[in-house]
Length: 337
Image (cartoon, rainbow, N blue to C red):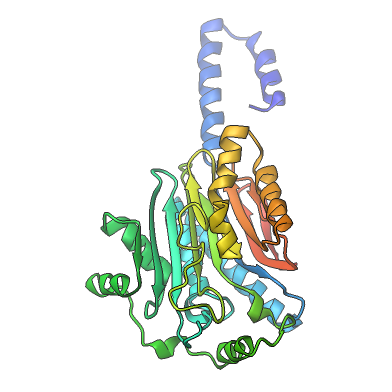
């Protein structure tokens, strides 16, 4: 409870009987706890990387999409909806856009096929669902949630995941849905080993969201098309619980974006929460320190995070990271650089 409120209570106590004051104090403290428990908010990212070649028009287009998505996802939380619903909604919105490397905007592997990964985690009970190397799923994040809710498993891969999707009537699309001449050109350039660092699309991968709802439940979700020209079957950190995604009530939720192999080796998402839980670090210190440590081994990327009090953090060690946040105690924020 704020110091000012305690002072007012002490002053007020001199003018009422002790029994009445004790009851008043209990009620006031309970109201303070309820107010604290109702902190809520959401953080999203659209990938980290070299963004120096991004046109003003493309910047505006991306920022508008992030703002629009944040406002709608925040409304879910504001209306008493769950953090799971909020993060699934936000990520699926990015998957439906060609602005990001996930879902419809996914890049090609070396065989000119999109292979997509996604995961979602509920911090209330640490339940999680994930899919990897799926090729015909319109919204991998929605299928990941179905894995969580309708199977005894955590991760389904490739054809098996697609059979499951058909069984539960999740939206299946023809591969032509993901076709992109722009992404195909990027693949051809990558195969010729031509440096193309001034084009944003070559350097962005992964979308994600983390949220805290009014009930104190934390959720995290991440989705990606992976790396351009990756080997068929390559899986990065996105569907790996603890690496690309982690949610833990009373601690934090994290979604990662960057060089997946390093994020797997260092269990980046879980590591943030571990430092908060066992070293008593703040969210900002834990997340920022990890990103700085990754830079020392030339591991590029970023993370978004939210803690039990709706504090947020969005550190990155790249040229930029598409990101945004809004909570009940902070204004809408969107940035790229």
